[in-house]
Length: 52
Image 1 (tube, one colour):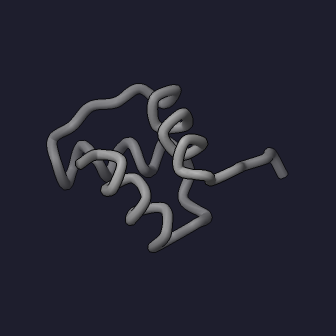
Image 2: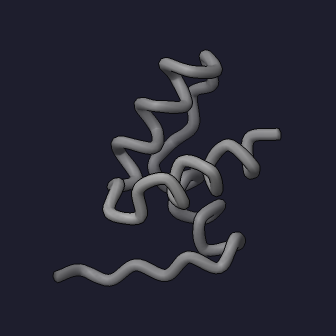
């Protein structure tokens, strides 16, 4: 499940940017998602990010 992979990746490193999560999904699973899809999935999982 891609949502689980996104959540586990974010849990492992909560400082990881959406772009890094996107690259990890391609490397580990061969799945290509847009940055918008990664951000939307993380919001759906309850992760909230703000610009610092």
